[in-house]
Amino acid sequence: MADNTSEATVDKTVAPENPERREFLKNLPVLGIAWGAFAASVGVVLAGSLRFLFPNVLYEPPQQFKIGFPDDFQVGTVSTEFKDKFGVWVVRNDQGFYVLISVCTHLGCTPNWLSSENKFKCPCHGSGFYMTGINFEGPAPRPLERAAISLAEDGQILVDKSQKFLYERGGWDDPTSFLFFA
Image 1 (cartoon, rainbow, N blue to C red):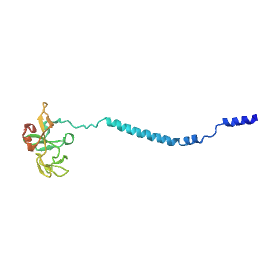
Image 2: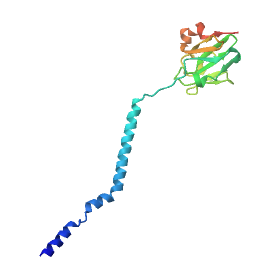
Image 3: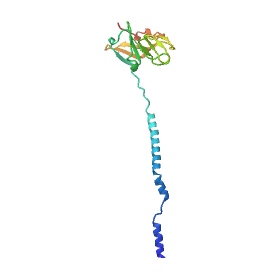
Image 4: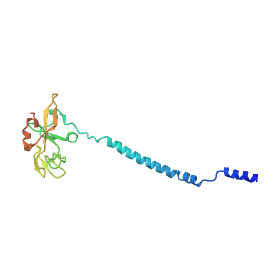
């Protein structure tokens, strides 16, 4: 009888197979993928939350800027080199200079200078403006706006877009809307 008891105790000390543990080990790659997806989604939410804390900043060009010396511009021409950077055209005629703001007065599109037709033409709805900025065709309700222009201390032309002059309010008669230069 003693022999039977020792065999029974030996059988109990041997660990029986545990099917639950094997199933867990088989599912380990699936669990890794699940935890990875969870971590990625938490990362996306965290990144979005952090991005929310920093505001969007719109860098606009300066409102006052120098465009060069008066001799750099030819009489009877429209300079389009400042249209993209500063949003203005510089016009020189026999009397001097003026600066037109390159925003259509209809819906705010940016017209183009057509030198062959000697006019500004808005591509959005077809408004047309003479070289002076006066509207003559299309739905634009009023002429283009002018910006303040003056001569800086170093002899360069200084444009100030923060001062706008409207034709219909008599703004074009203001001495700062035109730079007399022979």
